[in-house]
Amino acid sequence: MNLDLQAFQGTRQRVCRTVPAASFGSENEDQYEVTGPVTIDLDVRRNESNFRLVGRLDAILDLGCCRCLERFAWPVGLDIDILYVPESENAGEGDVRIEEADVNTAFYRDERIDLGELMHEQFQLTLPMKPLCREDCVGLCHVCGGNRNTTPCQCTDSWEDPRLAGLKNLLNQ
Ligand SMILES: [Zn+2]
Ligand SMILES: [Zn+2]
Image (cartoon, rainbow, N blue to C red):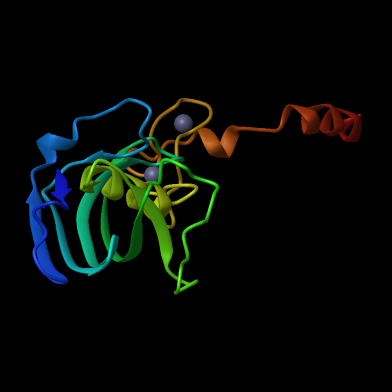
């Protein structure tokens, strides 16, 4: 999933790729899984050794709901605007001059841009802090452990905060 910069012709190129879900694998530390093909459509503009990638990234990710733990599809459509500058060997000296301060900057090395890494980073950035299968997900029952979205149970009605139980006893006396 590399963009070969040595093969780059001229100053501008369109790069369209459709990457099958299988090429992403499923690393356990990821909070998401890629379930459908990912499409990336980029307008790549070269300015000497800098490459600006502007375009769009579309995918369907699979996330786990933080309340009911069910997996659910999370469609992602992201606008991309990243400036890739060479990772110089003498980093720190004569810092790279970035003309457009509002552009995200990344580094490339070995004359290639790793599009897989780019996608992974973009996915990470877009993931919700608390993924929910739906806004009003009622989650798991803390008594019987059932998924209250699909199997409503009566536990909630009879459940009582143990801290309140003592108070109630006092009141009943
Ligand atoms: Zn849920
Ligand atoms: Zn229950």
